[in-house]
Length: 245
Image (tube, rainbow, N blue to C red; front, side, top):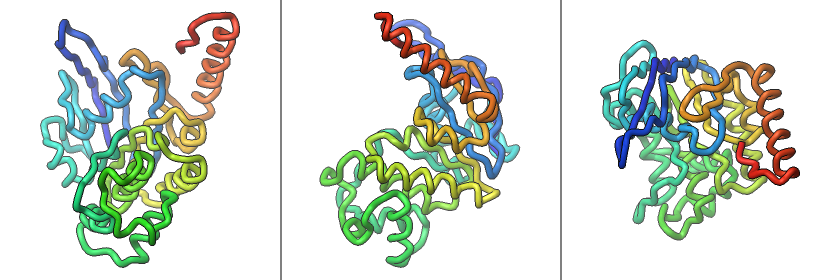
């Protein structure tokens, strides 16, 4: 279980600005938590704080009761936290199969690699020997990174807008893969997304706006609020407003 307690993050570039302000929530094991909200609200910053890419100004982050606030990215990865970036890195000279094996921690059979890639909508035979370099599109790279995270036996998986750059057919397969996460009672998942199909996978939805939690609860509690905001935006746009919800 992940616990976030009174987490605050400020930056001082050209004057102090509060990006996240006193966030507290839990992500139970075996559940999917979807974090959504308007762009610029602090969602990706929160993911980076949990992974250790950024350090909080104040507050605590605990994994299964252990305070990991001061741990490095490497230490958190060793504890079983995995992170899929919005814009994944490229690795020239490393094949897709080798990357999957590195993530898994041991050699993988070709059928095992094929299974991982097919779960994210890639034709595995075509990709296993390809290098993870500039020859791959952004969408291909994103799907391969998600497959590497699936290859790991993580306690907490963090996906930052996994739908970005992925075609509709592959997105459908990705949603099915996320649905299967519930079969592992030891794994927690955080998915940052604006996509309704992904939001509907959530055991709990957290809405972050302006650096604060503006709403939190089950699908039944939160989805009507989100749908109401979208309809309000459409109304504003029809009346000539800027539609920035």
